[in-house]
Length: 216
Image 1 (cartoon, rainbow, N blue to C red):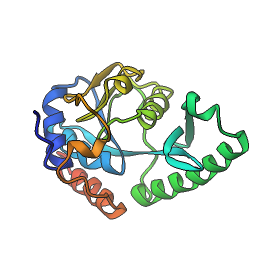
Image 2: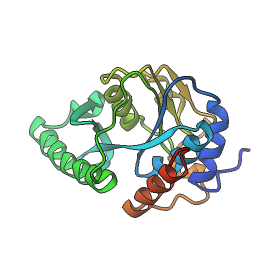
Image 3: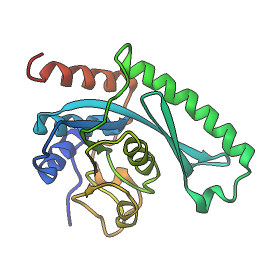
Image 4: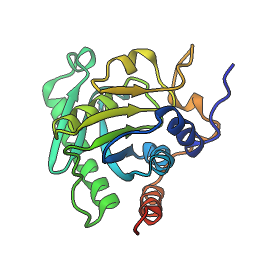
């Protein structure tokens, strides 16, 4: 039986080995919050720029953990992906109310993490999207679709653990997932330490990664 990852950083190092070399101008985007901690060692291994992509799940009002969709922000644009089997049973006004609430939180986090840095520019770049795991896959689907509309050279979706069904549903050029647990219930089962990640941790990891890049 496979042992859980010690923490997100350890998972990131293992994931980087699975990804291997990526040609071109490479940009690694960690999905905030937890994905940023996994993405940092990936960016280091690839010698790539690290940045953050904020994605927010749209939870069903009476069951917030159940995703009826997700929104992702790339630059000034905001993209919505619906989980139709779930969203079909929710009143459109309720969906819109949740979307507005999550958009406010998305913009708050973007401002918190990015400060006065310009929006992400992914055009003609090899973009590696990293999260700490894939359960339903709704947030990663939103991230892939949002980045694709900005015309990158290629999109790679990479996670340390995930369900086979969710990974198959991604419209990425390449999907990297080294671990598909036979009995998959939640991303946290793949980690010994799956502590909640704070905004301060995300900011620190981004700053440290920028300082380590050649030429800085």
